[in-house]
Amino acid sequence: MSEASELAGASALVTGGTSGIGRATALALAGLGARVVLSGRDADRGGKVVAEIEAAGGEAHFVAADLRDETSARTLAREAAALVGPLDILVNNAGIFPFGPTGEATEADFDATYGLNVKAPYFLVSEIAPGMAERGRGSIINVSTMVAEYGADGMALYGSSKAALVLLTKAWAAEYGPRGVRVNAVSPGPTLTEGTAGMPDGSLDALASQAPAGRPGTTQEVAAAIVYLATDRSSFVQGAVLPVDGGRIAV
Ligand code: NAP
Image (cartoon, rainbow, N blue to C red; front, side, top):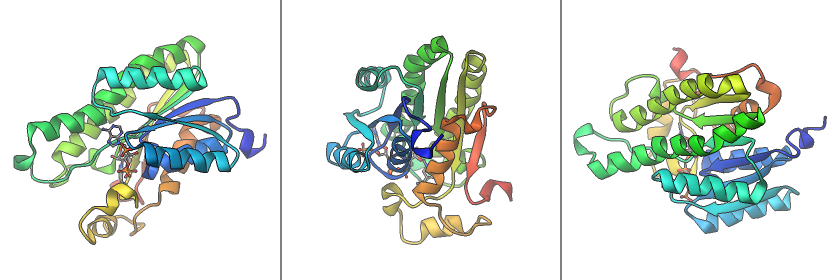
């Protein structure tokens, strides 16, 4: 099989596909022949990613979605399926990463973080995974973070939301795995994206310097791990959380 046809005929939804890790994942999946729906709030950025995929000979569609609750998640899942058919691959990538003291986070910060990082993946899976299970196949990849794995000062809100996603990964592997749906997660370390570009000068490098690799990762490096989990290359991998963090949580 040529690489460009590995995912021929497969349909995929990548949330947060307008930027960073999600954009690189959408490009990579489309490059393997998948028909990709990418979501986000920003139609300009979405249109640019779609154009880039089409220019490379792939198929992509943008669906605008402000993910925050059950309705927004279920609506996105239905709109995606209407465009590319029943979904074979779901990448729960959209996320926000607020850092700071626990005492300074507001209830609105808490709700926005858990709404996007936990509630939206929960109801996307609720809408999509049962159909995958009926068809006997599917791959769901959740994008966590290394700071879901250990206690980090200033990352209580963000880390705890992703820790919930890690447990959901394992619970869904137990629930849907026996019916052919593999559910896994990647756990990136500091990665150069549009989202992290706004962090204070030097802070991403400082975080990255704690890991054996000693440098931030690229979006392509994280996307490569997501592609591994999305394809049959990982056919016996279920409920795994794959660190893509330059070795940070190993040491
Ligand atoms: P990014 O560049 O900031 O992109 C975030 C994406 O999420 C965008 O496509 C954005 O689209 C979408 N998004 C944000 N809020 C949304 C909302 N309310 N509804 C729907 N979509 C929304 O992020 P990134 O750095 O690539 O991170 C991607 C994922 O990796 C996140 O889950 C993050 O927690 C995780 N991660 C990142 C790093 C890192 O160092 N970069 C490390 C570990 C884990 P719009 O702006 O178009 O809405």
